Length: 254
Image (tube, rainbow, N blue to C red; front, side, top):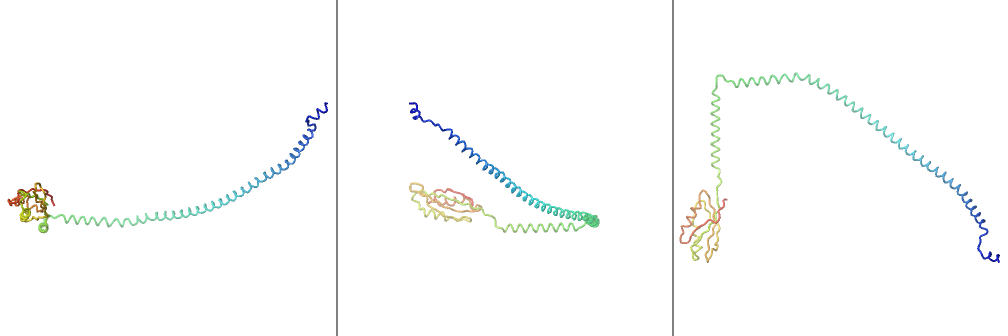
């Protein structure tokens, strides 16, 4: 009865065997992994060392090249400084020699200008002083006055011959008839018959006023000095049979 019950139960009686096998398997794996890790560490340690050496070599080469370039620049600067020093020496020598030459030439230049102006001033003073008087001055004054008068006379003649500016005016007249039966053509003919020196008639037209009556609107140009508006209106209103009145519609200076 007890044996049959044990036969039905699932009991792992040899589990220790499997545990020992698993432990041995992992021990073997750890032993195999140790040499590989050590080799990898050595290769990794060796690789950076080789890379550092290459970088150092390249930096050293660059520093040597820069050092050579600096040596070349220093030599060029030393050469330029030596050239400048030689030029400064030359300029100092020329500057020191120039004042000596000026001092040597100065007395010769100062002698002539002092004597010449003094002589000229003495001569001018002698000319200005006239102890006994002279008639030459009076003759010169008379001649100058005659020349001035002659020039003034010529200028006056020239100005008188030059035509002056003539002042003119443009006038627009409104001429009104007595009624609508007035002959407007005859009225215009009478207005244009007025002739004066300085009067020029222009265009004209008939303008309606109202109730069939029209007025004559006529343009004329007059010279202000010769023709006055009062005289012009008086001459036009003399035609009493046709003209009732005359008004100035517009007056403009030309």
